[in-house]
Structures are given as structure tokens and as C-alpha cells.
Length: 209
Image (cartoon, rainbow, N blue to C red; front, side, top):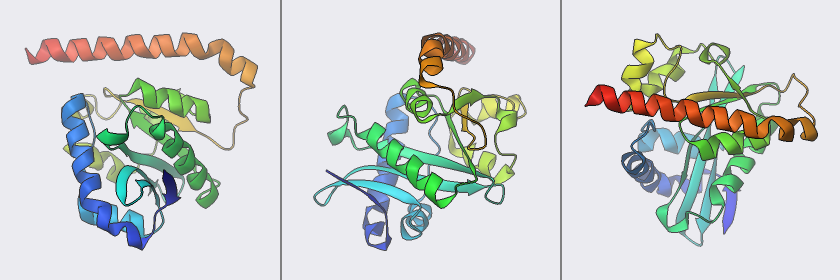
């Protein structure tokens, strides 16, 4: 398995990347913003993405988006092809794209919005902290990108203050908690997040019935 910083030669994988993201959204039944091949190609050609390959076969992907004139960056579109799931690949891709983001944009705050508890745990391991949406970018272009998500109505009803996603932020200007402190609070934080997510999904399901 090879995980590399993408370049122009990887543009041939744009279609399968988009297809994999779309299929994952259907299977999970949760929000994943769709992307067009043309958009993915720009990320591949600009070196703002990480791609995993098993020989010539596509295995996984994630890309960098820059917002607020470079004050914020997001690692988006994290996806693993079904043939390579449950192998720990997502965590490896997440770590490499995070390190790549920090190298290219050292002063930027790195943020994430996700409904997945597994992604939240990966973010936490990298130093992200749960935050309110008001602490994320106010670049409207970012939030407009959520329009293809099935939960966009929730975001609009709350005036972009909250959604089924959890906002998480890595701020390079703040000192990280010591490992002992992080472990001390880890179980409590993740139990709380899990309960919040479950409650929100249950309410949404009841409203749709």
C-alpha cells in the first residue's frame, strides 16, 4: 500500500473518488458533501490531496481546502474504497493529510465537521478539540459547500449555528494538553459526544416519520 501526496498524474482517479464518496453517503445515511470530478482534479494537480493506492488500484483519499484567506484549512473528503476498509487505512490517510496541511499552512487553524465518531476520535488523537460552529471559518463559500449534504436543511434552520455534524478545531497557537490530561478527559468527552449524536439522530428520525 502506498500513501502519497497527490499530483497531476493522479487525475485519472477523480471519477472513482467521486463515485466512492457518493456511495459512502448512501450507505451511511449521513451527511457527506458531494464533489464533482473537476473539483477533485484541481486538488490532485495542486498537491492539496493525499491518495492511497494498491498498485494501480484506488484505495483511499483526502484533500485540503483553504478558507478565510488562509486563516483556516479543512481536511475534507476522507474516503476509503470498500475493498480496503477495516484495515486502519483511514487513520493513516488522516495523519498524513494533517501533517501535509501543517507543513503547507503552518499558521492556519485546521478544522473538521463530521457526523462520524471514528473521525472524531482520529481528530482528537491529532490534537483537535470539539468547538461550536462560531469558532470555525465564517467564509460563506465553505458553508455553501454543504448544500449537497442531505442534512443541509438542519444547518439552514439553525442559521448555521449547529447541525448533525460536530465541529472540531486544531489551533497551532494554543499549547496542547499533556498526554496524561488528554487521556484523563478522553472517555468523558467521547461518551458525551456519542450521546449528543444519538439524541440528534433520533430526533431527526422522529421528525421525518
